[in-house]
Length: 367
Image (cartoon, rainbow, N blue to C red; front, side, top):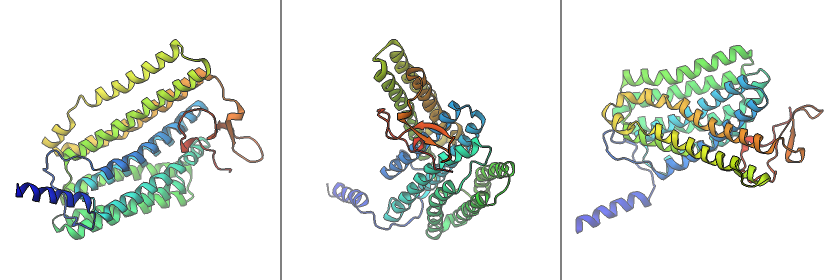
């Protein structure tokens, strides 16, 4: 009984007090480790970013800007997903849920929000043959990654066994972030800038593998990583269901329930279920805990997975709305483009549609 009470007090002290704790590394062999509430809160911010990027893709495709929209979408998905992966990698190795870790996580969430507001600018620039990179997105990326650099340096100081690899991660992220900033302000041609972006993205994915093979890997937990990716996949799948509900609500609001509305509802749910079924056919946690070296390829495979799921939801919503309601009335739209004329009509954030507001549907800035 005394032992049970002591254990309970230790657990309560861990959960109730979040003062500074040593960042000495988690146990990479720990079984059954689960995501923490702060990690799940962090994920919700990224799901909004996925939805915003997907909505911009759907809007670009509807205007006939297929390839520019796809290019901007690929850039956005990489920027969003890679920042999330970087944090998840660190949190799996060193997440101690103390006050400093929580504050650093919240600051990174602010960076995600800033990046989201840069997405409309990115897609519009791509539609005009310009680079999708812009200072607003870069600013968001800086806010996201500077706290991560500080966390890696803190881990390097408090975990001597992994000091070399932790320091290498901090230096790599810092160099990469400087390169991202320079790519946005250099004023190079679009072709050269896009080529630089591709090289930077490739380097960001390749360098960590090289570093961990030469310096050893941080104490990340393969089972925990598998759970984190699986949970984010589930949340992104929720976007497909939300898009289906939004489209059907708009359709039934005009014409009431019809066979088409029922078919769209059923199709959206079946599509989301099919994605879920296919994804979880593979017992990722079991496999990665047995062969952790496979985690690298497995996590990179999620770049197109997250992008594809989010795109399906947004494109289905856009397509069903067009079939169900025809064209938007100008009263429900906001004029965008040059103040002297031109531009295009976009849905207004103040429209009467019951669809949830999305920052990517707000008016674009005047240029």
